[in-house]
Image 1: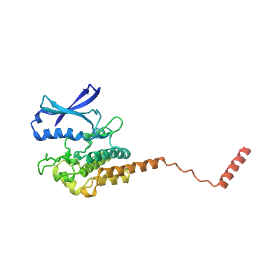
Image 2: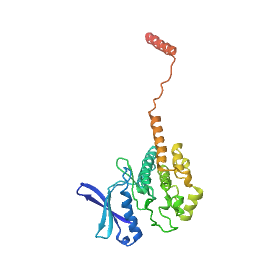
Image 3: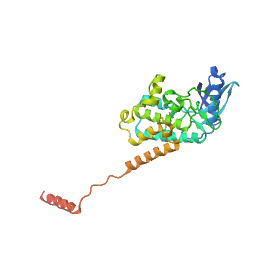
Image 4: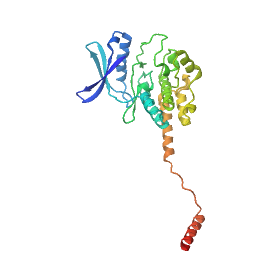
Length: 287
C-alpha cells in the first residue's frame, strides 16, 4: 500500500521514516482515505509502545505521505525466524507492554484490527512498539471503509467477529494479541492453515494445538491468560486490555517475588550443634 523511505528532520537533527502512498493507489479513494486516516488517528496516540508520528503532507500536491518514528529494528516475526521461540518471562513482558498500548488506543476510540508479529517492532533496548495503523477503526468518527460482508485483516490473526464481517471492538485486538503470545511461545501460528475454508473451520470449531502440548514448559498462569485472550467467544475474553495487562502484571510480580525469596537455612537443634562441635574438637586433639 505504501513505500517507506529513510529521511532526516533537519530542524530536530533526527532520522525519520517517510511513508508515501504508492502512486498506482492514489486514485483509489478508499485506500487514500485509509492512508490519511492512519495519520489522523496516530496523532491522538502518545505511548512509548506505539510508533510516533511527526507530520504529514502531499508529494507534488498529489501523493499523501506521513513522517514517522524511525525504527530500524526487526519485527517479532523476523526475530522468531532468527532466534526461535521466546522464553515465557519475555513473552509475558511483551504482552504486558502491548496490552497497555492497546488500552491507550481503545480509550481514544482506536481499534488496530491487525495485531500480528509483523506489526510489532522490538527496539535495541527491548521495547516492543506497535506499528502499521493502516487498518485502524476510528470508533469516534465511524466511517464504513469496508464493503458490507467483506472481511478486513490478516486471515491467520483475524478474530471470529472479523471473519463474520461484524463491527468489532477492543476485544478483537485482545484476541489477536493472544494469538501473538501463542506464536512467541510455540514458534508456530495458532492457525497455520493456508486454505481459507480450513482456516475458518479451525478458528470456529477446532481451535489451536494446546500450548501445554506445543510448549510444555510454559507456566500454567501464562497459558490461562493467553487462552482467555484468544477465546473464540467474545464474551469470554478479557473485557478490556487493561484487565489483560493487570493479569500479566500480577504474573510478573509473582515471578519476581518467587525469584527474590531467600532460601531458608536448615534448622539444627542447639544440643546437636554443641555435640558436633565437641566431637570435632576431640578429633582435632587426637590428630
